[in-house]
Every structure is written in C-alpha cells, then in structure tokens.
Amino acid sequence: MSKLSDFEITRRNLLIGSATTTASLALPKFSFAQEKNTGQASSVTTIPNSAMTEVGFTVNGEARKLTADNRLTLLDALRESLQLSGTKKGCDHGQCGACTVMVNGRRINSCLSLAVMHEGDEITTIEGLGTPEGLDPMQVAFIEHDGYQCGYCTPGQICSAKATLEEIRAGIPSHVTEDITGEIQITSAEIRERMSGNLCRCGAYANILDAIEHVAEDKA
Amino acid sequence: MRAFSYERAGSPQEAAAAAAAHEGAQFIAGGTNLLDLMKLEIETPSHLIDVNGLGLDTIEATAEGGLRIGALVRNTDLAADQRVRRDYGVLSRALVAGASGQLRNKATTGGNLLQRTRCPYFYDTNMSCNKREPGSGCAAQGGYSRQLAVIGGSEACIATHPSDMAIAMRVLDAVVETVNAEGDTRAIPLADFHLLPGDTPHIETVLAPDEFITAVVLPRPLGGQHFYHKVRDRASYAFALVSVAAVIQPDGSGRIALGGVAPKPWRNEAAEAAMPNGARAVISRLFEGATPTEDNEFKVTLAERTLAAVLAEARG
Image (cartoon, rainbow over all chains, first blue to last red; front, side, top):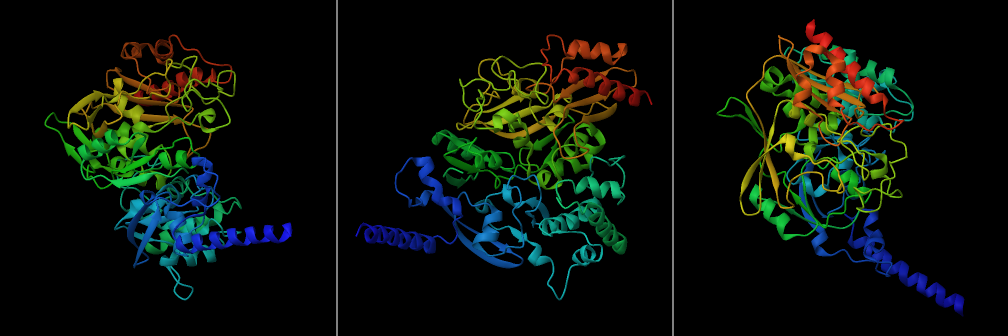
C-alpha cells in the first residue's frame, strides 16, 4: 500500500516535471535550481515573468526568436534551445574557447554572454561555416593537417582560426606585433598569440597551426 | 546563477536612474567578468541593466588635444585605433597583453576598470574573503599569496587589481567621466578612482551605486617612448605577476606605473624623479612601506629587473 502511494507521488511529480519542461523549452537546466536560492521547499519552481525576456537574432542567416530565462547564456541558447550542438561547452567560464562563435563578424566566447543581450545580432556558428558537402577552406585544412584528436575543441578552434586571419588582415595589433604602427604580417608567432584563447587538451596545436598557415598562404 | 530581472537602458542617465531604482542592480556591458562571477554566485545582482545599446562606442578628439574614449569602446577597437597606436602606444600594448582575442572583442573600456580581482580566495566561496563577504576574514593572509599584492594591501585584503589597461591609463593620467541618476556628471582622475582596501575591501572605487561611467579621457599625448612589459607564468593569456607601463622621454625622465603588485595601478610621481639613478632607485621609492609575503617577495626584485629592461631598451 505504502509502495503504491509512493509510486503515485513519484508519478505525479514526474508529470508536473514533464509539463514544466514542455512549457520551458528555452530554459536551461539550471532554471530548476531556484529552490536553492530562494529557500522554497517545492521541487518545481515557477519562473517569474520578470526573469524572462524576449529576444530575436539570426543564427547562420536564419531569424530565431526566444522567450529566454534571463540567465540563459548564448551558448546554452544555441545548444539547448536551438539544437545547434556544434558549438561546444568546455569550461563555461571563458577560459577554453570551445564555445567560440562569431557575433556581427567578431569572435566571442558564447558562454560569457547572455542570450537576451543579443537582440538583432547576427550569429554564425560552426554549422554556418560549411556543410559536409561544401566545407569551409579552414575546415578542409583542419582535416588535411589533422588539426584535432578528440575533436571537442575543433568548432571553437575553427571559428577562432578564421577570425584570427581576419583580425590580422584588418590590422588589429597583438601582443607579439613588433611595430604596432606598421603593417602586420601573418607569422606563426602572430597566429599562436591570437589563438591563445583556444585550448586543446589533446595537444594538437602544431597541426592546428599548420592548418591555419595553409589557409593563410592559400589566400595570400 | 541566481535569477534576476533584466532591462535594456535607453540612455546613460536612464541607466543610472535604473540603478538607483533597483537595489542590487548592476550594469552589464561586455559581461566577460560579471557573468563568470554570477555563475559562481560570487556576484548575485537582482537586476541587470544592459548598457550595450547606448552607443558610447566612439573615440573622439578633445579640444585639449587628447582623446575621449566612450565607455563601451571594446578593448580590441581601442587597441587598434590608429591614434592610440601612434600617440598612446603604452595603452595599445597594455590592452593586447591582456585576456584573449575573444574576450577583448567583448570587454569594454568602462568594464575593464571595474573588473574584480582574481585572488583565488575571492573566487573560492568555501574560503573567507572580506571582499566577497565583508567581515568574514582574509584567507589569503598566511595562505598561498604568490599572485597577491606586495604593497597597498591591508590586514583585511591583499588582492591585486587585475587590469592591464588601467596601468597604462594611470601612466597617461587618464580621467574617468560619469553621470548619475540626476544627470550630474563628474570627472575623476584615474589616480583617485580605485580605492585601497583598508577595512572595507568590498568598496573598490569611488563610484556611487547609481553612477555610470560614460567615458575615459586621455590628456594630450606625452611623446617619448612607450612600453608595457608584462611578466607572467605563460607567454599569453595570463594575469601579470608584474607589469611595467612606462613613457620615457629622450632626456631619461618619464613616468612609471606598475601592475600586478597592488590593489590599484601603482604609481608614485615622486619615485619618477629617481629615474636618472636607475631602476633600483625608482623601485625602492615605489615600494616604500611594502609588506610582501614569503610567497610574493620575488615581485619586488622582478619589478626592478623588468623596469631595468625597459630603461635599457629606451636607451637603445
């Protein structure tokens, strides 16, 4: 008897939980951790309207709209809300670069940006750079030069690699630029310095550098 | 991360007014430091005021021959500005010595000044920290203090200020411009902007809660040779153990500010008078009253050697 009622309680909680999940597609998992902060006893907490914001941006050329929990990072919006799982979550603190995407033509760490802060922005992820049939030259170079081992950091590496070459061509100086008033050459030192925000725990750095240099030479 | 309400401000004064209207509100610009700290629940704002739509993203010449840098100019754009590279090389060098390419694309001029320390005890919520939780104590005292301050700290706190940009701006005598909820503006010399910890290490600047940074103004160019030498544990993407920002004139006079050693950009104009006598003379003046720990006393020697390298390079 007691076993049956336990089951019913569990089943009811499960149903409530499922309904909440369906209604909150744009919410990250941590939305349900509110009880820790508010001290409420209930295991299912309603998100107040003041904690949600509507936001619209384009991802890989496609207009997307979300009603997002304010806490939702751009990274979680891409992966969890929009099912674009090419962008990876590594450290989630801006230290590893696995989450690198392009926003309005600039590379950023999508883990350190809130989705609601991107109203009207144009976002490009690894899915927008190329397709299996029509790879971006940087993707081809990473394959040819074996610029990865496990592949987890690769989407971020490729986004960052493309941005690195664009930043050098745009004349943006770096820490290793000797003459910051002169023209900047694409050298391995420049590429290494500018790629320092992308970690690869397999240690494929030498091949990643080869791949980027290959693309730089092809375009030169 | 704790829940918070969110709004997009329409003007600098509106942003300031929103901060006055919401207790526990914070401005968010690049978010590269604030969001990191919010995820760790070290920062727990109840309301975020997004200031990214305010403009304030241009660098304009001032009537005095200097530059007014909008508070929302990104670190990348400030470092790449042709006038900054030509006339304020120390600032461009300092900016590109900090963080990663991705972070510099987001981080703003105003936000960089307000970033919080990277003291490991501030980050570890299991440890006592007077900056994070006033009155709880300072676990860094007697703890692992290799990265921490050798001067300017107190019994309550020995955290350093992590900015590279601010060190260069201090050497340039930059001025921070603000507006508050009433629309009153003020200009704060960077020298007076950051506070030493004393008994209140959680109060880091002279800004009022409703005061919003609109710009940083650089006085007219100083000429001379510009240097920013940063010594760190990795070649890239690491905070300074010691950094030296310097502008050196042909006659050997000049200005020096140090990073990585104190709770604010560390400069002492009186020490600069000792420059003709060499690095040791300058450093001994700059570190008068220093209280290094066993872990970080190397920073005094490292600062002297880094300055000596800068002076040697300036002599050519």
